[in-house]
Length: 419
Image (cartoon, rainbow, N blue to C red; front, side):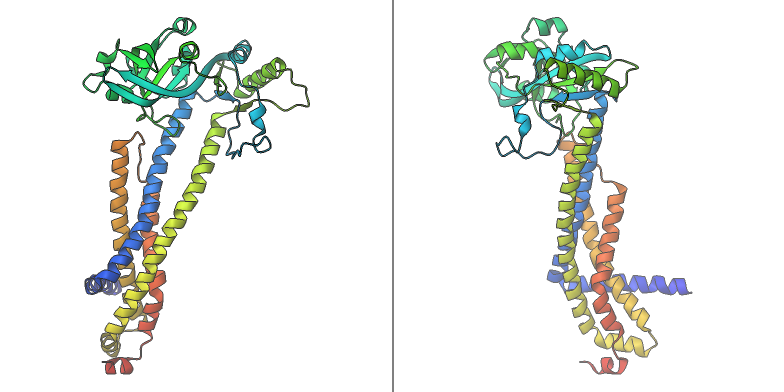
């Protein structure tokens, strides 16, 4: 019987909550809006971050578990104001092709992929992209890049050495330059990168991630072609190094560091004039950035919940005042303080849960939009949905507690006299 009574009281509280919403449409709308914004921020950001996380992990996994990176700059959050004190690494000599060759000669190294990125105008007849991404790689770049060749082929080491005018473009660039052609039909077409003609030999479907957005039009050309024909600067050249099978990452890194230190004639007491990082280090930096951003978004969410909570207090105080005689009648008929308290808390929680459901609905819609319009595989994690519902219910109970206590303490005799 007690269970049935509690269910009945719960049902009554929910019904009364909807009556209060109808009676106080403006206040209720502001309350629901505040809760909905708070919930939307949490769930929407969680879904986006979850999608980016999977993309980043896939991108780093594609490079291989033992792969590491050699760069001129540190893999860290670093704010430079232009002075040498804030960014001493600016004095580091740029990495060069000779550096890559020295590393490649080490016994534990299987391959070194050279890369430099820039942007350029890309044209095909009447279609033009004013600033497409252009990456220059050595021929084995596909070994460390997430994605797959959907048409054509990659350029060869010979084509890189000869600085051949060939290019592999991603699906996004093909769609924008050749909207009426399929991937296979774009093979062999000649495009202009800057003022130089390049023949398309492959279409690359890349994995979208924080580092490599599949929706950004991109052309990949041989490194030597970019250096000789497109005048790419190499001051920001970076290297991706793959150890041989059976050689640990630490051993390969030690060999690469020793080789570069000897080549640069660094004394034992001198620091490296380059940086070596692992996929784990890159992921650690990414998590640090996302974590700080997420804390900021949680703060915005808390503000939304606070706004909704203030609205809950206002609506519930009005509800207590309007239903003073009803409370008096119920107490006169035997209703306990706990019963009255329960009823008003259920009413407050119902109000905020409506806001939570609205926020989840908007968050779900945004998640689907992100998945359909971008390469980010956003997905709303179950923990975020549960946290949103519990947070909304908790907000309703917390801010509805004061009006509920006030209602439960009403004297039945004085309440019956209230007009």
